[in-house]
Amino acid sequence: MQLRYNYRAYPDAAQRRALARAFGCARVVWNDCLRDRQDAHAAGLPYVTSAELSRLRITQAKRCEERAWLAEVSAVVLQQSLRDLDAAYKNFFDSVKGKRQGRKVGPPRYKSKKDTRQSIRLNTSAFCLKANGTVYVAKVGSLKVTWSRRLPAAPTSLTVTRDSCGRYFLSFVVDTEPDVLPALQADAGLDLGLSAFAVLSDGSKIDSPRFLRRAEKKLRRLQRELSRKARGSKNRDKARIKVARQHAKVADRRRDWHHKASTQIIRDNQAVYVEDLAVSGLGRTRLAKSVHDAGWSAFVRMLQYKAAKHGRTFAKVDRAFPSTQLCSACGFRDGPKPLHVREWACGACGRVHDRDHNAARNVLFEGRRIVAAGRAETPNACGAPVSRAPVPAQRGEAGSPRKGHTTPAGIPGL
Image (cartoon, rainbow, N blue to C red; front, side, top):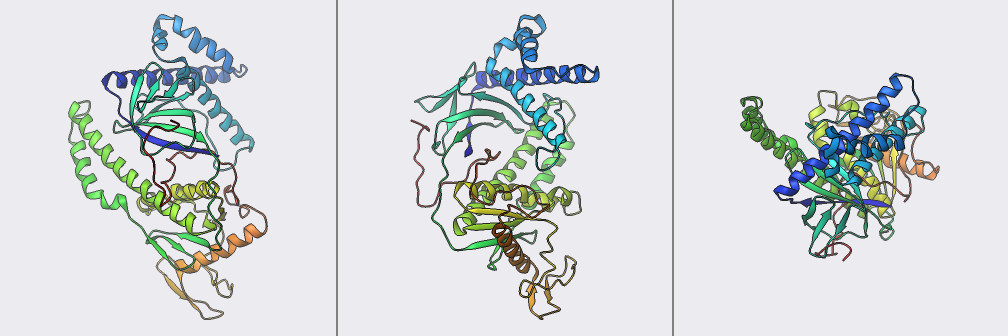
């Protein structure tokens, strides 16, 4: 399976300028190739192949005066930008044809130099790990990196990213063998919510940290200061960076908390079942801020890849499953209930249920039924592996090391 590891990088002034050139050149190649394919489609011409685009927009473009600066960056960066465009088109075509599961994917779009996130991708021919603790990137130099842990294997690709607040990160993708944990008898159903982040089928609750709500006061003050600055001024850029840094702190705290909570759940249970929530729909309601603050989708993705990594069972229960309407004791369906009803008594057996605990138990029973039937999901749920299986590298960083295992310092692979 593939895992992704993020490390903070600290380039100097010259390296930041070199990375800015690389970001710009990769963006220009993407936009030029995308424009050629869109023009060919509008004119009714055949699909422009990657070989033709590579010859026109990379090889010949370097010889032109208006694109001569493309030669200042590594050719791997330019070729990888074209490969990423091909992957974006393939995902779009597969989504249109129904070959790709999940949400529909739109066609590729143009990139802007004003985007808050800039990145380049490199293969093993354009970077290497050096013995002095730095990472050499072609035509950029040796970047200083803070190694928080060792890489479990030699990296297969590197993504250099600059976020909205000016931080640089190196993201390595490595192929590793699953770290299977000892088998357990316990399993758990999770009911995700807002008053409590998650309620487990055994009755335990995980309180919601509400990182965004706790930072709202400072964010309001920084947003007011930003709104008073003149557009295009240096003071406005400084105020914008302050706002971006505060949002980055909130996102980092939420991600760290998600990793710790998901790792603990995976270690304590052999099987984990979660309800497939319509997060995108809930994000358009009056509860949007609280829904985005909870970060359910990121948390579920962490559970999914950690279950595959550690040999656990994971399954999603369809969002149409009436987990809050069924009595977990007798199975009687008591009808829908408004959100303010937190406890209710079954009309058939008379048992009094806590709304969230009852839903978690129903999710557990439905998840067991799905696994027993040999399916990964109920009919309308999104794809989720039932047992350990290869999964692509997640976008976020891999989880923290296991308790009791120290993380050796040093350079991975050395």
